[in-house]
Image 1 (cartoon, rainbow, N blue to C red):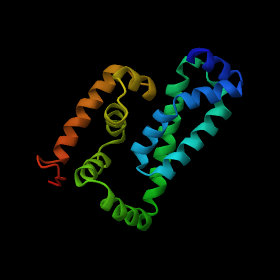
Image 2: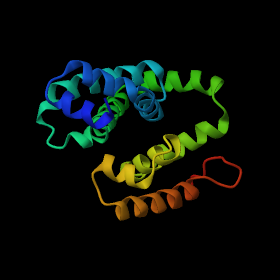
Image 3: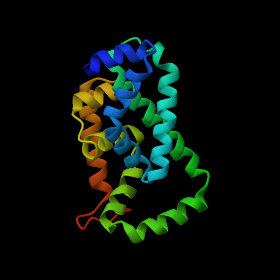
Image 4: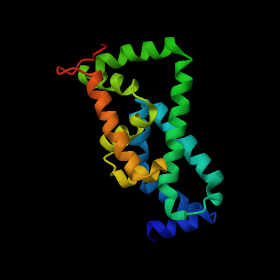
Length: 174
């Protein structure tokens, strides 16, 4: 059975087809969740929440061919919700960042910090393009917007990212 047939069957209530689709894309889903949350357990929790939501609402999906972009959109929203929740719990995040500083290179931390300063639409496009290696067409489908808009957001996001970082890779706050 190919992916399109799995999607049609999953949207008709076939549990096995739904499982096959999610299993087939589990690495991509994990990569997206991890690139947003930067924590394995939070990423796995976001995926679990996404899979539950997708299963519950799967029958309402009008275009089964859009199944994976639809699931990715749900995942992104779950990650955004988690990030909003984190902002309300500052001491815990600061403590975790201290631990991460010991494990992650300085440049990566600076890049992540610079990405965090971007508008969400730019951050989404840059994350999907460079962390997940998605094409502009795929990103447009996931974000449910025209490809030209994605190109603009990519260009603007890179422009802002350059402004936030100086030549040495460190954050620039000027």
